[in-house]
Length: 324
Image 1 (cartoon, rainbow, N blue to C red):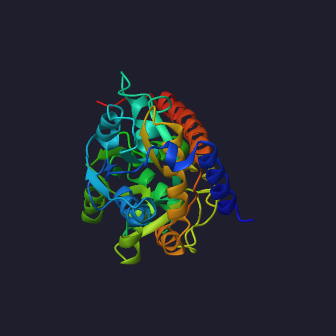
Image 2: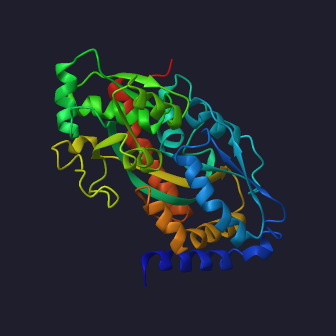
Image 3: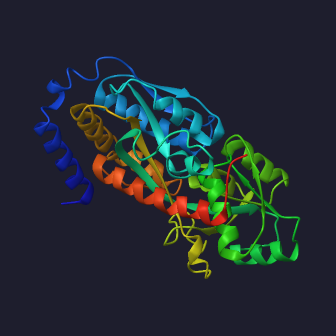
């Protein structure tokens, strides 16, 4: 039995044990709001749009995407903690606001481990380190050498302070001895525009954000941060191949709600998400942007997020990082 089939079977049994949709009181009986904490055009927006139609089909209800950008996704996450715990307000979670950003603030705006209901993971994927196509560096090792030779002139772009793109840049600094200046933007799309314009020199972001410009020949991929090469970029080395294993990281995306959603509602949503992600066309679209569909159920997803919190919180402490 394939792994995803085992997950779906387990979730179906959990739903049955919880009483199934009947115990969920006909859930869902009205449209569901799906919050995206970033502007349109970025990787999280891509994920929301990819799951919107198949979830609507499975749940037989509309999913209305609600863009709530700002502060690297933390505004939307904080708002979610105040939503009704009935399953009708969900959010596409990702590494930045759910494993990094809260630790960068003197007073945490929310507790990413305790203040949310983790419904299911959607995908995991390597990040890509990219620069302009006309940059002299052909891979990340060459870029590091260039940056050291041009100290004070190089910086890195991110989709906002506290995002995974920010912390991956800091991880690069820590792993290589660089001191690149962080230049934050309000989302990946404007950050990429400035990278293309030459205002910044490198960015480490998801395939969903960077691959279109790489394929168009406007950006050059220098390395991928996962443990193996990305099938979408077979000629681009991993950081481990380049002797930069300390830079390894993967990004996650998943579905979350406010803390306290009833277990039977969580089960219905988890089953619907796995069924949506099991559609071949959905998996193919995620693969096209370098993301591997990995539908962890609620408990396993929550455990994975806790481990990611431990990892990134340690980097924040080590680098003595804090949002202004």
